[in-house]
Length: 247
Image 1 (cartoon, rainbow, N blue to C red):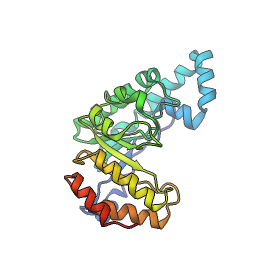
Image 2 (cartoon, rainbow, N blue to C red):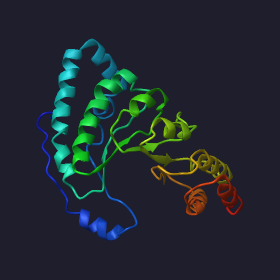
Image 3 (cartoon, rainbow, N blue to C red):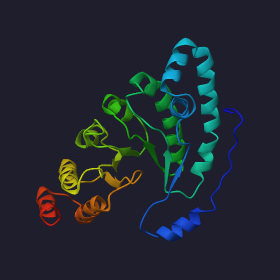
C-alpha cells in the first residue's frame, strides 16, 4: 500500500472557493495529513507499537518509512501546481511522542524538501504543530516553511508565544486558540494576556478553533475582542478593548 498508492490532481473546487471568499481569505491545500513518521505513529500503528517495533526490528520499520516517503513525494508537484495560496504539509508535532532525534531524522528532511520545491514556484508553505513544542523549538526553527500552523498557547501548549516569535524570528505563527471551554470572563482575561504577549502583533494569526463544541457566549467574547484588535497592538489599545468588551 505504501508503494502503490497513486494520486491525481483535483482542482475543480478552487474556482468555487475563490469566488466565495473573494478578498476575504486565502485558500489552503494539503500534502498528506501526516508525514511518513507521524503517519505510522498516529494513523497506522500507534505510539507504543511503533516505538517497540522500531527498537526491536528497525530492518522492518525503516523500509516502510522510506516507501511512505517516496510515495508521498508524488503528491508534491500536484499540490505545488494547484491554485492554492498556501500549502500545508500536514503533521501533528508534539514532544510527548516525537523526540528531537526523531524530528531531526524523519520530520525535518522531508518537510524541507517539500518547502524548497514549493518556494521555487512562489508558494507559501506551512506545517501543523499543535502540540507541546518547547524541547523541539530549535529544530522547528530549522524548518524552511513560512508558517508554523496551529501552535497552541499556554497552558495547553508549553511554549510561550512570545518566546516562539523570538526563536522563529522569520516565520508566521498561526495560533490555534482552543480555550473556548473557559467561561467567558476567564477567556477574556486569557485572550487579552495573549494579545499583550505578542505586541505589536505582526507575524501572528489567531484562529478560533471550532474542532470541538464552542459555547456561543464564549465565541462572542472571542469575536468581540478580535474584531477590535487592530494592528499595531499596544498596551493602551488592549486596555481599551478590555474595558469595552463584556463580560
